[in-house]
Amino acid sequence: MANKPGEVEKVIAALVGELAREHPIEAVGVGAAGFVDETRSVVRFAPNLGWREQPVRAQLEALLGLPVVVENDANAAAWGEYRFGAAREHRDVALITVGTGIGGGLVADGALYRGGSGLAGEVGHLRLVHPDGRPCGCGRTGCWEQYASGSALVREARALALADRAGAAHLLELGDGTPEAIRGRHVTIAAKDGDPVAGQAFVNVGSWLGRGMAELSAVLDPSCFVVGGGVSDAGDLLLEPARATFAAEVVAAQNRPPVPIVLATLRNDAGIVGAADLARHR
Image (cartoon, rainbow, N blue to C red; front, side):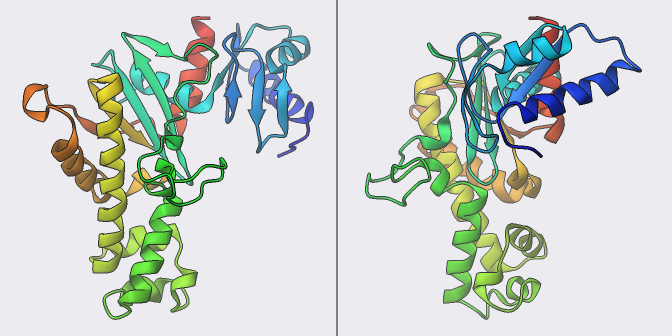
């Protein structure tokens, strides 16, 4: 996809035009992988799209002649799961997307929580370990996503395989026989097949995921956590250690109601569904 300012907007406008030939369209919702301002109109920073302080809403409305709502993609996904997915029965929800990094979206008392400047929910950059922890792409060290993401899963699996090649025999076979060739899909396949090293990698990463959720609960007290993103395809391999660690580490565990940790049901469509619904109720 084009990644120059103005080019992505043209692609979006073309897609909306195609849909308009078969469906009536009253408004357009956009889920953008970046920081979106409090007015849902300007994308302040989207590195993968080449956007910096980009007035996306104004540009798209000029191209389309339709009202446009722009929202962070994880926020849109959280709204989609709250309205139509795994969190329909809850009014206070934290969506955690576990992919290359960690993203998040928050629903508080039935409303999308965006913060004072629209930038709330960047939970992957919570610092959960010593400040001298693993370096993060954000420029800091010790961020949650360095321990509980898809990248962290691969890192864990490679390190464990290097230390125990016999235990990682199946995992190594899925690559080229070396730890360096291990990819995320290999870890999931091997763990489902019973490879002990791949399984331990999920335990380690899932435990970090649960630890971060426990910290979030101390601040936000959601009634439900929804886990999405590519790594969530592993299901209980990821969620069981997360649930166990959450239960062990959440503050006042004996004095609060149980908090379900569930898989997203809309999967990759959550952001699309959420953005469309936000546009419908703009």
